[in-house]
Amino acid sequence: MSDPRPVGVFDSGVGGVSVLREIRSLLPGEDLLYVADSGHAPYGEKSADFIIARSRAIAGHLLEQGAKALVIACNTATAAAATELRAQWPDLPIIGMEPAVKPAAAATRSGVVGVLATVGTLHSAQFAALLDHFGRGVKVVTRPGVGLVECVERGELDSPATRDLLAHHLEPLLSAGADVVVLGCTHYVFLRRLVEDIVGPDVRVIDTGAAVAQQLRRRLGSLLSDATTGAARFWASGDNAVVSRTIGMLWRADMPVEVSPLHV
Ligand code: DGL
Image (cartoon, rainbow, N blue to C red):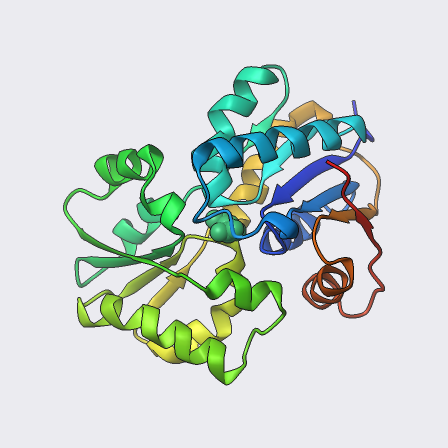
């Protein structure tokens, strides 16, 4: 059995394209729909109620477009809204994501793990539960990466200003002795090269994009498509010219990307 309907993916902005790329490479036959809510980014400093309302509206749009499953390609929106979305659409596979504390705790040799994520994620009950389950026996040092989402939204992945801000946020993690750094926000994955450069070869940098793609494959089961190539369609709120340019850069430099305005 095979299901040709698309998979819907969304984020507060362009960061979830890092997850979309993992999905594309693991499941090349799936048609993909992506919503970047860039007009309302960053979510990290917004209230949970605001994020729930946006997530509901975006999920509704993706379902109208025929999505057979939803991927919340955003740690912040997962923490704030996954429970509400699952309650509203109990039969829909909804895959969320959370910072990779579990693999980081298994990988650390120094016993100190650094987590870079948004304020919303770090202050959430879900993150507290994650630390409770998997953070025991290691020291977890957290840092809100204030300002980094905006750098990625503008497509500034390796400017001196982005590098300085990133170094400023990584410094407390490194001086606490972290030898594993978790990128707990999908936007930060596009800064991985800079992060690796700043932390040096003795510090591991991990994220959860590939694990989310694998989880999607498991959850789809008989809903997987048997097509050999899939298409990708994009919608965004905010300044369409800026978002189109950034998504064009982050998705596939060799392909023109058309981003439709999001009307929810
Ligand atoms: N990309 C999102 C995440 O993974 C949130 C970024 C934001 O603050 O909007 O948490």
